Image (cartoon, rainbow, N blue to C red; front, side, top):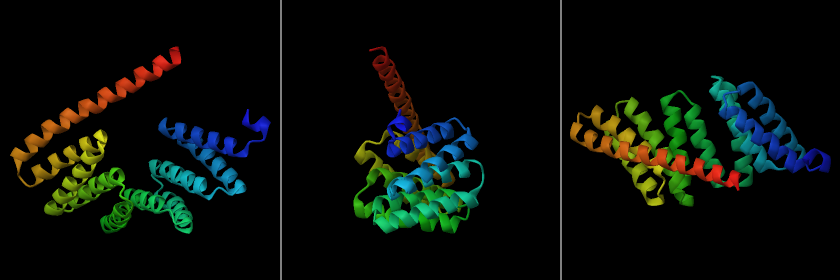
Length: 219
């Protein structure tokens, strides 16, 4: 339909959506194809924000394929676009994503800390909760348990403040690991109970969403 109408933004959006769906289905070659088509079209249109978004999707697909070099190339290009636009939220998310791709712990930590500084500036508690969770996991793997615990508790605090149940679940799961590493088994047991509670809550929410979608389709 969009092609017949000559609606380039609509075509580009559809291409990006198809690429994302293929990524979710682990059809990585197809995902790369459609992500790149979307990027090419957005570049023709001059929509830099959408180019950056789809570059991140393209990078995620390369990362899924184990090609961290190309993944980082995509994310660094996206970061340049966000910086040109002065989009602090985009810069922060991109830095956090780059942190996820890095395998070197020091680089991961540096990226997460830079992202967190920006998240705090724009008061994005939801994404800050995830970044703290990821940063805490790195500290835990390094044996820096006190710093890991501090990060996971901050992540839990932010996630609780915005009611992000999936983030709360992840924080409790990470806290169980950190507590166990510190031989604090009583705290680990309590956090394990909370993790199970929120894991079940997430499952129930997902079921409700699917039921709602089915009901809407039936109507």
